[in-house]
Length: 610
Image (cartoon, rainbow, N blue to C red):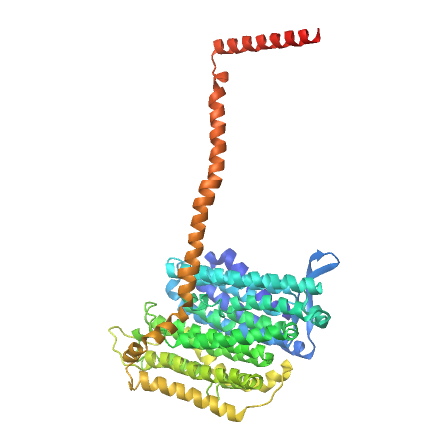
């Protein structure tokens, strides 16, 4: 029963706040949301021992019958689903607690709706993680899409937020269509949507058909995880409140694509060509996003590009056959990425939600010591510095890269350098660069700092669970690649050192450097001009094409036909309206004429008969 309670807890909170949130109030809604998330975490922990001992399914009800096949909605509990649900619910509950302090300035303006959407978000993600069939995964898939649209555009009075929500919705719909066709293809191949049944029949289908199905499914993952080419929505989604950014990037939506591929990995293993495509897309995105982060100045967008890059790392791991390594990196990444976002949110809160550019801050280590320490821990983990959690998961992945291809391994090392540089560039500018403030700047309250401290501790310690994680997940545990670990740590430290020399010591004036490398800087900042291409060419072209169709097709053709029919009807009506003019003399004339016409007709028929 505790397995179902994992889902029921956020679902109940969603229904209660949706129906009674206005009466409960904003603060009460925030507390209920945090409690629901924490209860879901407790239930997730409770179900882990049973799932590790023997994976099991819980069937809830029969949903639909198609021919001889009946789809039963249910849930599947094994090591992958239960551990992932525990990570998701723990990180989400800490973000929910933090949001009470972050959103306090919005209390009194129907903020209960914000918490209602958060519960929908968590429930939908758990539906993806725990469903035992592709249709259930799809319902959760669409649920997180809907919740993200509502949360990204939560500041609906800001055009930037509404535009970002729309872009996220559209980009994800492109991926979702591919995902739907992938599900349909899987059903046509195996005549089942139950993932356990599909795994048992994987070898009964041709590899080409499986390749088609997995490519379509991966297309859905590309959209959900913001991978190239469906990537532009992810950094723009930072227009939403910071707890939403943390939830999107650390525990829920963008992780859904990686989890889906890992969940259906037996299918993907049977399609080696699809795995190669995954490696290519992951490699391209990992480097692309890392380079873009080096030139941006928005405190949250830099971290968002980091998420894109790290998701690329995970996809490379999946593509090279290290599913367990990819999922372990997803788990460690959830903690330190949430920590980085919450640290950024604390800075934004200290400046009354008015400043977002990193150059608007400076020297905050003196005023916000807890936030500063939290950011440093998160940044060190992201850079893969020993002994933090990011070191253990990244070392394993890069080792797998080198085993698969030397070139991919080198790319992983290069991205490590760039990652260490851009995240400490942000940290040094925000916390070290000296700046005077007119107003007093102080640390945020305990409701925000306590979740950061917990995430900081987890970011330090969770990497030590690698051996246990690999054991229960059935993955190989080869230990540390010592030589490679030394190389990656040194490379990371060099990246940090370069950022320190430029942004703290001032060896090179950043403005002079940007000016000297204006072309490269602009290319990175504009995401290699992909966003301009989508917005200025594709979107503009589509709108122009629609206007032409409207002008030529609708106004001239369709409207012409409709107006023509109306004109003919009107003309005929005007021609014969005298018949019903209401004048008796005209009626008498018409009656006489009609009677005379009948007489003439009868006489003609009589003469013809004679």
